[in-house]
Amino acid sequence: MDVSTEDSNSIIAQTYYKHVDMVYRICFMFLRNVPDTEDAVQSVFLKFIQSGKAFTDPEHEKAWLIVTAQNHCKNMLKFWWRRKRFNLADLPESTQNPNSNEVFEQLIALPYKYRTVLYLYYYEGYSSKEIAELLGINDSTIRTQLRVGRKQFKLQIQEGKI
Image (cartoon, rainbow, N blue to C red; front, side):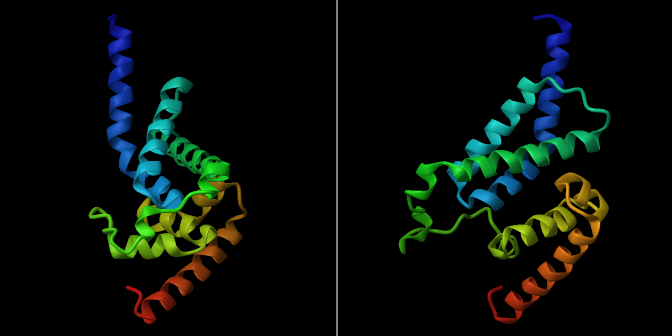
């Protein structure tokens, strides 16, 4: 193995360990089950490896992974076999995911447009302007979604769901 391959593998490993938790959370928000989420995470990083992209800075790399994870999960949700099956977690004897927390579970219960912007804002630390650029949506729309999402989240808390 030559030096450039070792360097490349090192960069891939560093990127993976740096962003795997973030990609996992994004995929879990869409797919809502562990096996599909794990498959999606693998696919996102496989796309990263195959793309051979050279990023201008760490934020560009992070943004690429976020958008790729979202798009991959949206595509997964379109498959016919996803609509024809049921989630084992819905069965009464099923146990909850030990790695999840109640706040995150309530966040993913929100409608897509609110949970995505709230996640990116609070968990990943993006500003509304950065979220707008990532999602290709107007900045004022993102601020509105943040405001409405917070209100819906607060209602969930008041109703005793958390």
